[in-house]
Length: 195
Image (cartoon, rainbow, N blue to C red):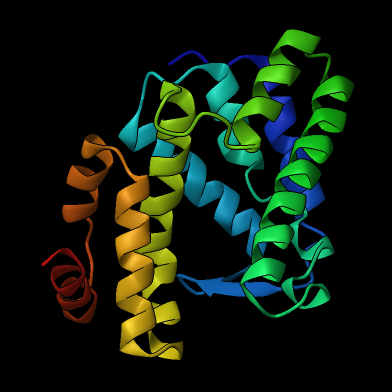
């Protein structure tokens, strides 16, 4: 998996943008800006799940949540409609932020357009790279963010979210999910969701 200088520069600038995240997360005794840690986890999971991923997909994965804190969930109505609007606006926001950085680094418009296409999750289940992106997002969620989520919500909602997550994944993604180092509690939730 060759790594271009442009890719490394883009990663550096994505991480620099995310380093301004006021939300912090402790991991392995070290404090990270939340979105920096998320971006690193996304890249590591992609490298493990799809080691031959294209440069476009590698860029997209690293920029998946870029500057997410700038559009907080609380700034939208706290209902399903508000949630869906927030998600749609975030996709466009991430696509624009990533584009600005990729232009600065010197990527051509074709590459930038492909990254935007993927960040907007177009053609899920029909486009192989959009599907790989979604699989990686789901795997990172399940491995690192599911358990804290499960502690804060009623069982019914947790099972529902797991079922929705499962439906978004490819067969390869689902197989990888079953091999994640989940806690006993998380494994039990997964079993309930899939039964």
